[in-house]
Length: 205
Image (cartoon, rainbow, N blue to C red):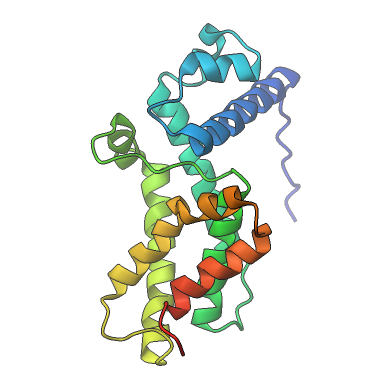
């Protein structure tokens, strides 16, 4: 039996990794609060508590900063999907993923998606980690959508990709903020209402 090789990380490397994580968390929050266009590198550096020059040692541009936050949330989504019970039905799994998305957004941890003409969009398209994650999530959700349609649990007349994009749109749904600002409902009630409109529609049953 071969001995296990333990790779030791130096104290300096640990500190750099911790600082990088703090930067990405800060960017994630700012992207959720105000979006890419309004966020500034100066603002990120100030909130992390480092000089802007130090920040640029980790990330070369504002676009790279934002892309790192987008990759982070994509990996969180992949981890959540992988942890779902295998015995659940495709519809149950889809509801769980949408619920998770809504909860992350209400917690202020869901970065806003870039606009069509944003420089961040071009950066994300060229980011292998992000695009691989997006394809992985899309493939897994797409398979569950098709299985749920075959079982008669989702409208089989709708293209699967239209349903997929409807689910993705929940990550930037302003309805959540509107309901929360009203102060009439708890987060769990808001999640249940949006889940109901997403999966059950608005028609009286």
